[in-house]
Image (tube, rainbow, N blue to C red):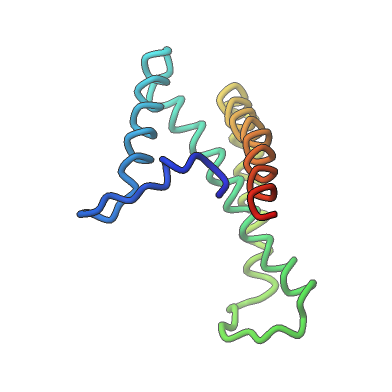
Length: 131
């Protein structure tokens, strides 16, 4: 478990994470009430999303280098050129976004960095529970 147990609750009828959806809605409303507008929230979200898309795309190289003997039931078309182009374009997009909207991009980075202490806390709690 890497976050609050209540946010993992699944609605019995709709099978959706209803508590997490409600918490996300409340957080969004709070951000809007604190003065952010939709453009700012959109910029913040897009920066964080593309950062993780880039990281996810680069894992193709990491896993193929670390585990060359692993079976590959899916053959990636154009490897290594296509994923490399994706990672480079994502990096360029991130650089452009940060350059043109550095305050919101900076907030995006701060939000991501704020998650590190939470992750560390829940990781330690998880390890202690498993002992």
